[in-house]
Image (cartoon, rainbow, N blue to C red; front, side):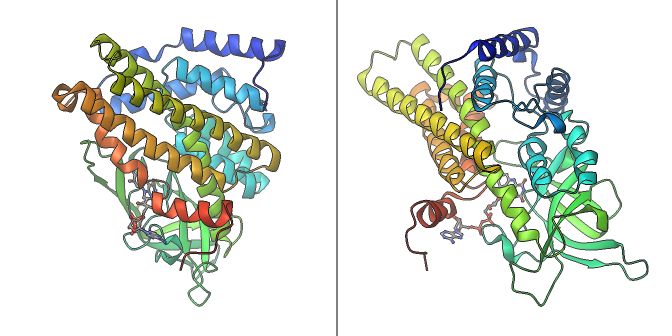
Length: 382
Ligand SMILES: Cc1cc2nc3c(=O)[nH]c(=O)nc-3n(C[C@H](O)[C@H](O)[C@H](O)COP(=O)(O)OP(=O)(O)OC[C@H]3O[C@@H](n4cnc5c(N)ncnc54)[C@H](O)[C@@H]3O)c2cc1C
């Protein structure tokens, strides 16, 4: 891609930069998790009002139909402004694109608008206690209700459901055909979380936050109109979500990682550590990795614009991002010393939160298998 700006792109950059200057992220409340979430939700609402919540979405769905370069400009400016991830990240990056790919016109009309404005938050109900990497072995069951037959009744348990406590909707995959081979008996549902059959139990992470949850489904009901992509087609629909998760989330997160690296360089500079050749060498290495990641993420965006959805290369970006972010946060702790490990220090949070990076959205081992088989064309692992 060509990142030289024409007049239109330069005007877009000025518009976005002016918007972030007028809406600074610096007043984000520091510690209370609910207050931070409410702030991020309002921030996304303001972005949506300015037509900036999802610039690369097609105009007909509330985006700006931004070109690849304009999308890149938006993310560069987001990083430059040290702005947070939008509150409805899973809606914008996973649910929205999956509904655009597989949804009926009615589903698109109903769901895409409230995703953009963060009026309706989404979570992802894929993983179960006995089904993570091997997602297709999931056991949550959905059966058609007896009398009218146009509702599905869903019973089972999901786990690690991030943001379920704030969510109105869940991307839920459940087993609907118990005789079919495991990948073929699944269906993808748009589940309304606000009902008696849905119970959420928070799980506290090593960082102290209950970012994710157990999700218990006890005869939860979903109308047939909320099946996405057709009954029995859930595996294919889920793959669309997973590919968008790896490519899209890594794209956002490489911007976030750049912010962290700039903060580390500034912190090291303040302590007079930049003249140490070992420190300079490691920071140089991290800078190189961050740049490679940025350009690889743009390549992924090119694939989305050319083919309508990301390719398996998104797995490579996600793997590189988690590896680099773990190295960066560990190096920050080594460099800045014990103060960076105290509760309340932002580096302590980053170090602990980075542990989950190589698990969430597909573990590094599984992503390596995908890259080996589907990008490099190597023989399948046993
Ligand atoms: C912070 C965080 C947020 C999350 N949010 C969500 C969410 O919102 N929604 C959701 O549905 N899930 C979520 N998850 C769950 C995540 O997707 C799973 O944890 C992940 O897919 C791994 O599944 P598992 O935990 O069952 O581990 P397992 O699949 O049991 O894996 C255990 C170990 O075996 C290895 N392994 C498994 N299969 C293979 C293989 N074929 N080859 C080589 N090694 C293998 C794995 O790499 C891992 O080291 C989240 C996880 C985290 C950490």
